[in-house]
Length: 149
Image 1 (cartoon, rainbow, N blue to C red):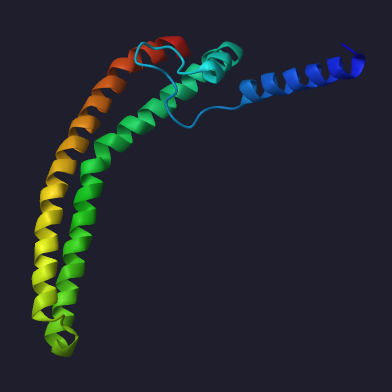
Image 2 (image 1 turned 90 degrees about the vertical axis):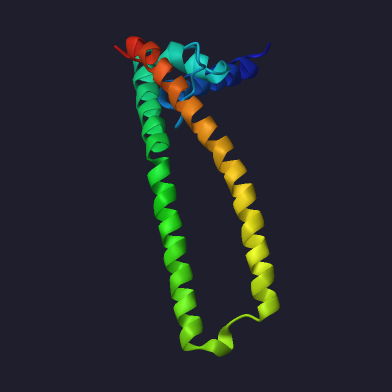
């Protein structure tokens, strides 16, 4: 190998080490068994040490916080949708000429029923996933916390 190739490899290796040393994933990058999730994060953990684990603890706490607040966010979104429907109905009362035809209203009612059926199924699936993820993250917390100290 010539000296130019060696210099390029050294620079490339240095850049990789610097990247791993200073970058941090924005999400939890740890498997449920407490090991880093992939090669890059294994390397980050070995280079950064406790700092990697401290950042992972913060990411874990952020995700748990988001997952716990999700029902409230959805309730607020549903409230906004109800308020929008109320304002739309008020507008139709004030301007009946803007109201959709009877056929359009019937079609919309059928679509709303279909959406409700699908929505219930999707909501149940997402709620199950949300609860499993919270349980998983809470179980992972002691493993990450012990490595961050």
